[in-house]
Amino acid sequence: MTTSTTALRNLAIEVLKENDQGTYTVPTKGLYPFQWNWDSCLTALGQAHFDEARAWAEIETLFEHQWPDGMVPHIVFHVWSDGYFPGPDVWDTKRPTATSGITQPAVAGFAVRRLFERASDRKLAEEKVRVLLPKIDKWHRWFYRYRDPRSEGLVAILHPWESGRDNSVDWDEAFERVPTDGIAAYTRRDTQHADPAHRPTKAQYDRYLWLVEKFRSLNWDNSKLHDASPFQVIDPGFNAILIRACADLAELADSIGEPEIAAENRARAERGIAALEALWSDDHGLYLCKDRTTGRLIDSASLGGLLPAFAEVPHERAAAIARTIENWSSQVEYVVPSQDPSDPRFEPKRYWRGPVWLVTNYMIADGLAARGEMAVADLIARSSLRLITRSGFAEYYDPITAEPCGGGRFTWTAAMVLEFLSAERE
Ligand code: GLC
Image 1 (cartoon, helix red, strand yellow):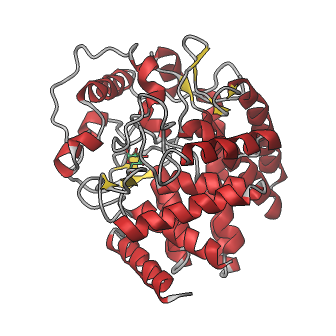
Image 2 (tube, rainbow, N blue to C red; image 1 turned 120 degrees about the vertical axis):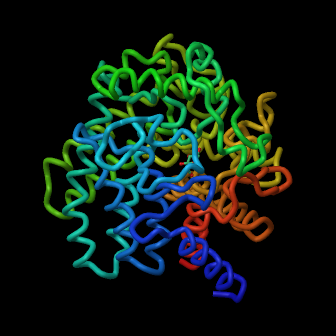
């Protein structure tokens, strides 16, 4: 390792330790004072580079708050804090420890397999996997049961926050169908911690809240939520992460002798890959979201359509995604922007409508490298590390100027830096 990579590694570890609350890690102090689902799973990959036991604990803590029906919530409100809105009182999910009532991208299966395969403490890893495997399987089953009620092979998100790409252009059209009348008065907290020009708009926030209040009025009963929601979107990125997690869980199950869990998850992944085909767009060179309430594809070329490179989509699809990224990269300085830069709706500083995020970079690069698209995988890794060196461990970055946006000293950004650095060493 050169001095500069050693320094970068140490800085990344410092950010992870600073946000560590003992058994879970906050995404960043102030802006996000609780545990977030996919943040934690990706954070564990970073923690494993210096403390394997701590990495397992991160995921274990998350799964301690799994709902009886199998859902793993997107936020666990371990301790009280008024720094974030909407807090536990708004969700009112009546769980022993307060949680939100929606979920997030199912990256756990992928993360756990990666932790397991790299573990130097084999005994500990096997012990942890035996406990986590059935829980992750239960979550996967929950997805297909409650979010794919007519067995199409792909699951819908019912709230933009579930996608992890909160204010993506992908949701604009479907969001027009979500009303805003009758919502309780509220004060946002995010815009007190970060520049409002980098955050979702008030019109979007009203609709986020309307959906929360609607689901709360149904007592968070997942057998009712899907059909009652005016927002049901099939996000190819969200599905690809779930498909990859199913495939990884199947491998993991095989390696510890759980053939039934292996077979079920392999079947989920195979059906998902086949069903994704209907979302492919030759015009854009990526997959599109589908609005389940209208049955139509949504014309928005975003990161969500590139993320299927993370799953085992057909070879020509992964190659076409790599070409699309090359094309986008000729229009911006840093990849991968969260929206096609030639789209008039592209906004380089606004959250998921243009900025680069290291977590999605990591997943896309991982998938492309596995498919032999080394040049584009390298381009993404180099872009990611250049951003950090220039602008520090931010939440997200302007793909044109590298301006750090959103929160600072961000946990999963630091975790991904450790991952990119260790891949570079290999
Ligand atoms: C934002 C992001 C989401 C992330 C959360 C915590 O809501 O859109 O993906 O999980 O912040 O970092």
